[in-house]
Amino acid sequence: MNKNKKSVSIKTPELKCVEFRVESDRFNYGRFTLSPLRKGQANTIGSAIRRVLLGEIEGTCITRAKFHNISNEYSAIIGIEESIHEILMNLKEIVLQSDAYGIREGSIYVVGPKEVTAGDIILPPSVRIIDTTQHIASINKPIILDISLQIEKGRGYIIQNPGYIIQNANNSNYKDEFFPIDAAFAPVQNVNYSIHSYWSENETQEILFLEIWTNGALAPKEALYEASRNLIDFFLPFLNANEENRYGLPISCTPTANEENRYGLPISCTPTDTKGIDFNQMYIDQLNFSTRIYNCLKKANINTVSDLLNYSGEDLMKIKHLGKQSVKEILELIRNIGIDSPGNTV
Image (tube, rainbow, N blue to C red):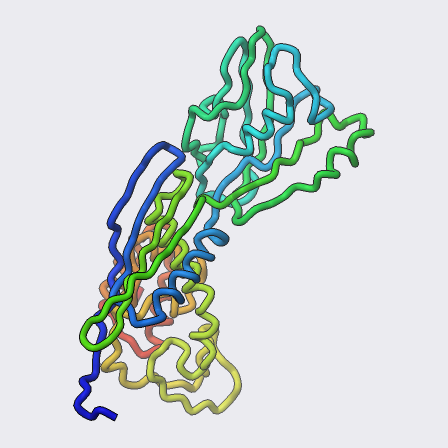
């Protein structure tokens, strides 16, 4: 064993966007680097983030369409070049963006002759079309194309039941039924990662290169942020496994009962010294806030406990959608884990 070998400390890894291109409304490209990393870390991070980018990022799609007075998906409408099936396939490709969950309603009502595009879709305020030029149908006669649409936000892929149409084929009211459309919610089209190893300070270090292609509903950097958030959420149960140190803080507990308060801390816990804790490295994800409170804080760009401590109760009340009761919950949690913040009252 070489006693003279120096211990090596790697700097905190830094993420950089080294290239970003918008080749069209529906084609965004981003290339990122993360370094320095220890040997093996780049593959661990690259593999995990790639899986989440491809399978866990939410998107918005048209999932059902109703053609008024049409009884069969494979019908043809005189005066329209495309069959119903072809129009459904075109609707499937429409790229949308939405912050709203649940089913949203849209519609198309046009009079020909006309080239029908995504820009002709009438949408609620919560939904936006990324590329209004996407083709839907070509009407070459003075007829009306009337379509009702259902729009949903989700993740992954949904393959609709192909037997749906057959099961309803004998239904006299079928003309008023929605045709299901296969949904590909994922806004991330492709992800590649590669690793470059190099020798530095007597140790092998690595650089992770990450390439992300999206359909324009999210920029690559936004998709990477969402994927990182999802990964953090996946691992929170492991961070919370130790009830006596749920928040990563030294807490001196002498429980007299098994009862816990709503933050998971034994009622008899008395918070102790928090010196030495780097609140810049402690994220609000670890504080077990409700989804609504968490989202409000994130929108206010409060990411770490250090950010949160800069806000008094009065400041928190000014954050949009954060009510007095929510502010009380935030301040109560801060007090329960032994941290004091400016104006820790409401």
